Image (cartoon, rainbow, N blue to C red):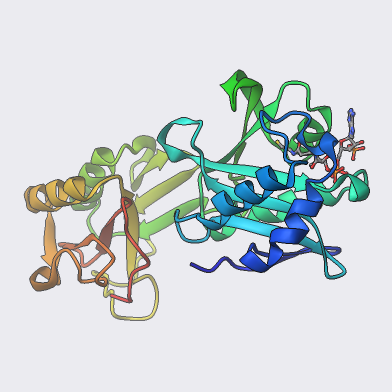
Length: 306
Ligand SMILES: CC(C)(COP(=O)(O)OP(=O)(O)OC[C@H]1O[C@@H](n2cnc3c(N)ncnc32)[C@H](O)[C@@H]1OP(=O)(O)O)[C@@H](O)C(=O)NCCC(=O)NCCS
C-alpha cells in the first residue's frame, strides 16, 4: 500500500519504510521526546518495536505513516490512521519532531500537510488528535492548525485533550440549481428523494423550491426563461447528480421504492455495479430526464463514467 509523498516549503513527507528504522530510532533518542508517552522510546528496542507497529499498518488507502525529511535528513514522523482510542476508527493525526529540530515551526508545517491531505485529498469529514493535557507545545501546534478542543478523556493511559479539525466550507459546493419543466413533478421526485436522504425544505416561491443539507442546497425551479421542455442528460451540461447514501442496504431500499415517486432505473442490468466493480450505486432517471446516482458510502470506490 503506497502513501503519497507530501511537500511543504521546507519539508518532504514520504512513506515510512524499513530503511528508515535507524533514523526514526534516532529521532526518539532524546528522552524528552517521550515525556508525555506511556513508553520510553529513548530505549532503542522500544523505538524499534514502535517502528515495527507502524510498518505493519494495513488500514485505509491514503492513510498511514510518513517520515518527515528536511534537506534529506529524517527529522520526524507523522501519521494519519484510524484511531484505536476513539470510537468508529475515526482518522487520528500524530506528529513528532526531533528535539534538535524543535521550535522552528516544523511540526506545524508537516502536520498541516497531513491534515490537508486528509481533509482535502481523501475527503475525510474530520481529523482527530489526542494530545496529552500537559503537552503545551503539541497543543499549540494543534491550535495553530485550527483544531477545536472538544473535551478530554483517558487515552493512551493518561489524561488527553480530544481535538478535532473539520473540513472547512471554503471551496465546497454551495448550491446546485436545476431548471425543470414541471415544478410539481420535480417536487414529487426530488422532494421525496432528498427528504429520504435527510434534506430539509429551505426556500419556497411560486416558481421554485429548494432543500438544504448542511451547507449545501439544491434548487428546482420552473423558470419563465426556460427554452426547452425537457432535460437531455447526454447533451453538454449537467449529466447527473451523485448523492451519498450511508449503506449498501439503504441504496437497495431507496432504489426499490423510487419507482413510486417518479424515478425509473437506469443501467438496471448491471445493478449495483454499473459504475464499476468496487462502486455500489443505483442510477435513476425521473420523468423529466434528470439522472441521479445514489452511491453507497460503505466501501465504495470512485465511479467510472456513466
Ligand atoms: C510537540 C512537537 C511535535 C512540536 O514540534 P515543533 O517542531 O517544535 O513544533 P512547532 O515549532 O511547529 O510549534 C511548537 C509551538 O509550541 C510552542 N511551544 C514550544 N514549547 C512550549 C512550551 N513548553 N509551552 C508552551 N508552548 C510551547 C512554540 O512556541 C510553538 O508555538 P508558536 O509557533 O506559536 O510560537 C515536538 O516537540 C515533539 O515531537 N514532541 C514529542 C512528541 C510529541 O509530543 N508529539 C505530539 C504528540 S500529540
